[in-house]
Length: 156
Image (cartoon, rainbow, N blue to C red; front, side, top):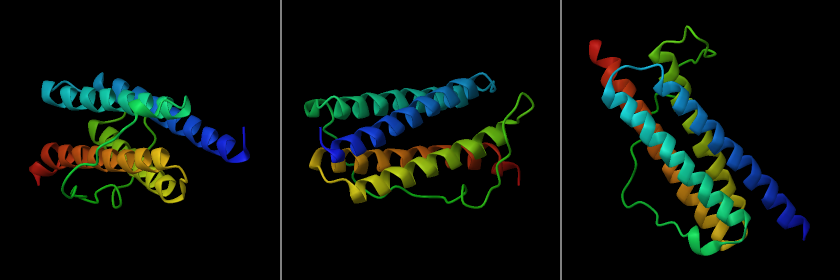
């Protein structure tokens, strides 16, 4: 195993942990909301994080047939709410607003991470997967920011 392989393996291990953390975050967030449509959105995001983890694990295992990712067509709108809202640590007293702010900032961090990895990845499979995951995380950020806009901004 070459040093490059070891570095990629460490990056993939970290990315897998990010996806596991995101799954846990959305699963826990589902217990904090009552509205079915919001629970459904959070559950969908949790399921997508599991799929991301599976793709990363496939690349780690060298199973490139299962990681083929088709980039989304069209531009994903970035509402940029995460860049302006301040998050607080989540605890048992966290509001739904607190959860959404943390979620959108986590998705922004994931997007930034995968974008960076796509820029430095040497293998075509890794580069393609990281580009795909960057798009997916931006889409997740958009979903969470849109939910925030729909549920919380509508009162203004």
